[in-house]
Image 1 (tube, rainbow, N blue to C red):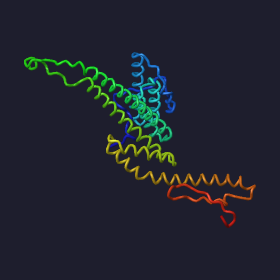
Image 2: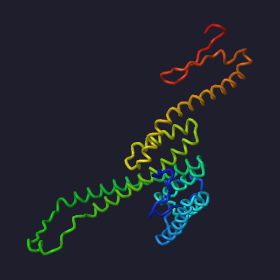
Image 3: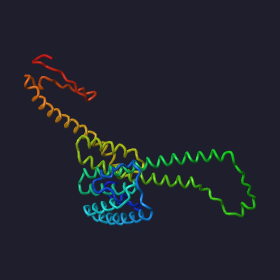
Length: 299
């Protein structure tokens, strides 16, 4: 079974986003998302989505055929013609872009694209939560207003038997079901984007990237919607990466102190001193350092 990192990135039944919007540099997508965004009229929006979907469908086919560079260009075209306020569709596309970069071993670009996907999903969840809170407040307001004006509906036994069964599904229940489906879709794309970003970060290496990969895998380990294959990957990476991150931290810290020592020697030389007069002592408990001054043989 293929993992979310390696299988074809296509998402069935989803449109792309961001008409006049970002190109390949995923970070260009961060254009004041909190500002009120101009929306296209429904007909124009539908036309743009149709064009974006056509590019995306072609990109999916190219990806499946192993033509990752060409697929990447097509995903870029899909992103470019989608309305930039459709965060879910854009998140799908940016996650697919990240998958292409992974196949091309373009780790930095994969991190950037996956991050844009995750940022879009965060915005979408925030908007959804605000809308849900507003709906709940409105429902509570209606309930209070209607509490003082309850009318009993009288239906005869014969009418009950003869008439069709009344639907027990309310508008609120339908709305709740739609919200749940959207949440499930968001969680699915989030898992894919996190898997792809974590993989790219671990490949980039270095203390910061490895720590970031560990955080992504920790987050993934709490998600219930991972495939069995992805769960194994997450567990394996959480065993392997922390020691590598610690080793990278120690290596980079040593390199930093070496550079500081060279700089310090240049500054102290006119005073007849050197950094050898200063002893750095590491606290093994906290990982921090303290400095002792030594003049000749004494402290």
